[in-house]
Image (cartoon, rainbow, N blue to C red; front, side):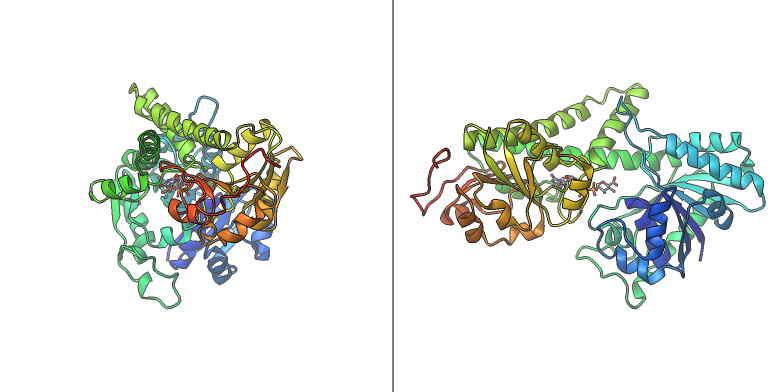
Length: 474
Ligand code: UGA
C-alpha cells in the first residue's frame, strides 16, 4: 500500500483517485472547490462516468477521503499526483499557472515538515520539460532537493470509459530521472503490472481487448511528457486524415466505410480511430494539438502538419453545415432536430463539442433547434452555450423530431444507433436526416423513406413514401 494524494478532482484526478483506492492504496482526493468536496463527501459523483459511482461508494470513508487542503494531503502522502487543469492560453500554449500554484503549495508543505522522501507526479497533460519547471519552483519554495523527485505519469484514459481504461491500460508510462522515484511509481502500479488486481473478486469487468497484466514503460521525465502530447496529436491526425479521405470519397462517389475497412486491414494502420465525423472535440485533442504545436515552435521546429490537422478539423464542421444547407436550401426559419450535444457518445461533457459549435452556427443562420442528448442536456443548459430562446430541449429523440424540417445526428451515442427509425420519420415534417456520425446504413435509410446524407458516402433518397413533401413545402 502506498499513501497517495491526487490534487484536482476533475475527470482525470477523480478517476485516478478512485482507481488508486481500488488498487489498495490509501488516497486523499483534493480540490479547491469546497462545494465539489462537500458533494463528494455526501456521496455524489460530479461527472457521468461508468463505474465511477460504484468505485467511490466502495472506497469512500475507507481507502479514499476528500480534502480541500494541499498541505494536509502532502504531509500525509508519499506520492502526490498533480491533476489540475492546463487550459490553453491565447497563443495556444498550455497555461501552467495552476500546476505552478499547486507545486508551490506542495513545496511549502514539504519545507515545513522536511522528514520523508516524496514524489510529485504530473498527471495533467503538460508540455515537455514541465518537470524541470516544477522542480525549480519547489526548490525556490524551500523543498530540500534530496527529499523529493518530480515524475511524469501521463494518463491515457478516455471519457466515458475512463475507469476501464485506467484499470486495463494499453500501457502505463512512468517518466522520472531517479531510480528511487521509478521504484515508488512501479509499486503504485504493481497490482496491474503483476496481475494481482485481476485475480480479486468483484473487480471492474474486463473489456474485450484487455491486455493483462498491464505493460509498464519507464522513460525519462521528458520522454513521458512527449509521449502524451505526441500520442494525442497522432490520434487527432488520424481523425483528420480520415475526414479528408471522406471529403475525397464524397467528390468521387466512393464509400469511406469501405475505404476504412480496406486501409484498416493493414495492421500497421489499424481500423481504430478512423471514423469520420463532424471533427474531433473534447477537452483534450483540440487543446493538446495546439499546445504541441506551440511546444514544437518553442523548440525551433515548425510542425506545420499539426496546422493542417486543425484546419481539416475546422473545415469538417463547415462541411457539415454546408450539407444541411444543401438539403434545406434556406436555413432561416427552419426547425431542426439535433441528436447529440456531447463531444462524443457516453459522456455528458460538452467542452469543445463540435455539436455545440454546429448548433451555435445554425442558430446564427436563423434556425430553431429541438435538441436531445441522453446525458449532456443539463450541462448544456447550465453552460449558457445557447443564449437564444430558439433552442428547445426535448424529452426524447422523437419529441425533438416532431415537426422538424430535418434531423441532424451530431454525437455517436450508442442508443441513437438503435432508434425506432420509422417512428422518427413519422414525427418529422420532412424525412431528411443529415448524419454527422455515420450511424446508419444508407440503403436501409432509403428503404425506410429517408433522404439520408452522411459523411464520405453517397447520399440516398427515399425509396418508398414517394409522396413525401419536398423541403420548403408546407
Ligand atoms: C482522448 C484520448 O483518446 C485519450 O487517450 C486521452 O487520455 C484523452 O484524450 C486525454 O488526453 O485526456 P477523449 O478526449 O476522452 O480521449 O475522447 P476520444 O474518445 O479520444 O474522442 C475525441 C474526439 O474525437 C471526440 O469528439 C470523438 O467523437 C472524435 N473521434 C474519435 C472521431 O471523430 N473519430 C474517431 O475515430 C475517434
